Picture 1: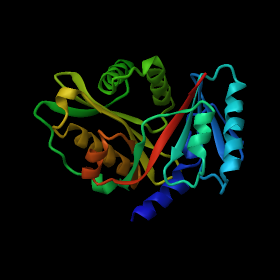
Picture 2: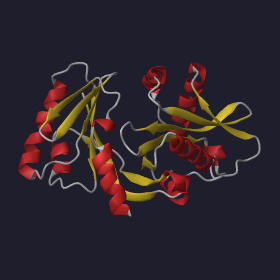
Picture 3: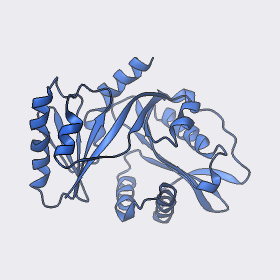
Length: 260
């Protein structure tokens, strides 16, 4: 089952479907070099075409040079996957100034397994949000929960996507009019997948089933959209919750980041 899910992930998600909001995408050998608004570069690929360590050692600075030539690019993320054949890639990235972030688990599963009834604590309700004030409040809560500011860039990006109506849904849990948990649902066009991202819960509300309920609500919405599979890159906070919900860890992903 895991092999089947991972094969679907590689075939369906590691394509243009991975960068729907990109301003531009340039091909460099097996790589896809995406540029996003706000001075962000993103490097991904379906595989490295069997490249050996020497080929990879040359490919990394070539890819970086593409972004260094654009003065508006401030940071670049190279998204690696643990199951790829990529000899010498971590070393080549480090030698070119990329810094590894914390690894995350690639979680996959069937939407129907997540779409279950989860009881909510008394006084907690779930809904989708689209208004700017709600989006700003949601992002502020996520910044607080993650302990790192996302800034106006994230708010602006979400508002642009809502205006485009690309299918993304923003889900929140509220208590006494205050957002206590939140997460996105991102259906991937032309695939069987919908992604669940940005899951965060205020510290004092954790361990009460709220995030599981948000996950279930997003899975039900994904099924209504005709999506049968769910994917997520999960931290160690959310991985156990998603495993209890029915997702399985099929690999890992480690982002490497370069900053100008």
